[in-house]
Image 1 (cartoon, rainbow over the protein chains, first blue to last red):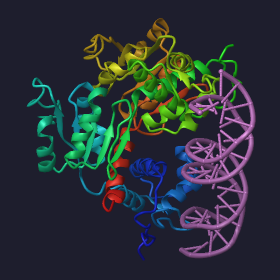
Image 2: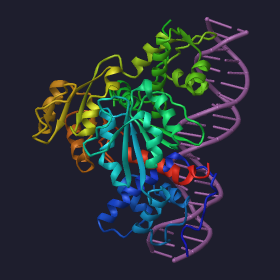
Image 3: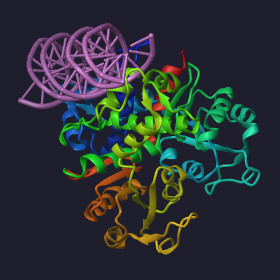
Image 4: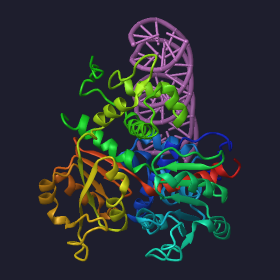
Length: 221
Length: 221
DNA sequence: TTTTGTGAACTAGTTCACAGCT
DNA sequence: AGCTGTGAACTAGTTCACAAAA
């Protein structure tokens, strides 16, 4: 019997918190598999990685009945299911917008390649960078060729690492080039049309949240 | 009358979501001030930046009565209050652990300096890097000198940008050196003792969440 | 009149606890 | 017996709506 027999309606909402946790579970499973563990209960998984067992079960049950009562989850099986749910069973092509320090670091970041992402292009507006490549060999194209290159290379995901003031115009270009999912590292509010997914990582907000802790909570903790 | 007359008990919890938003509000106020706006209502702020007016008011009211009924908030005043609440009224010293691509990019990231963070040191274990400096001049020290340098330089915040396998040992060293707030860019679960604040930015989870969108939601959206 | 500050209502997310399968 | 999958209970977070202040 097929364990993916429970299918969500395509429009049923999945919380982003849930999908983020699926990534975490997948990483845990990698480690367990590497340690030779064949099956794992939600309880054991929770204890080992500081999570809640019921939450793991709920998150997983949302996508199918992957567990076996009395046994737990088969590590290899669950891994395969999670990779499929997260869309990691096909290679995803990524372009980095902005070939500055951060852009180049992201383009060469080994963690992205590891899970099947392929960084195939960087884009910049500066003549001194265009035509060059990152250390690991990702070519830097003229931002004006974005649409052309994006189509040719079938870019799935754009990563924005440009200064704040050019973030929205660059984002608009990426969207116009047909890219439907964007990871943004620029600070500030950006707008995308419906049907395009924007996820932002705000480095300043992260640091300031630590500053807040030190100023308020840390003093008398 | 002092507008900070309402004081939270030191132990009263503040949601991280709230403190993150305070950073966002502060950034909005920078922009408004630059545009010459002197007062702003929660309604106008909400509309301009895509937020909810009641939420802005609640977040702010949590720390004091900063607004004036019938008028709104004085941009300059509120900015000052937020900077003080977020602990940005003093310079905070930051050290980056790991002088690889990502570490160097973070050390030179202009956004950190802008809000008063001062990146004063990088640490690495590789002889070829120790003694060198980042492009913008941040010196790279031997990780074994962490404790000494951290004390001498009064490091407030550590930023971890080392490979996954060394993340926990490096984190332990940072904690042992007396640093109470850490921003982590390594993937995986890390543990810190109580009294130390760890905030993690997981680049792989972020990308995988976009992959999920493309695999599940994007197709038929 | 305008707009804050805030209790009340609502919505989302987490955890509990147990029926039911293996 | 052991563990999943899940309704019910609970907790956290958001939005509404309005009294009170300027």
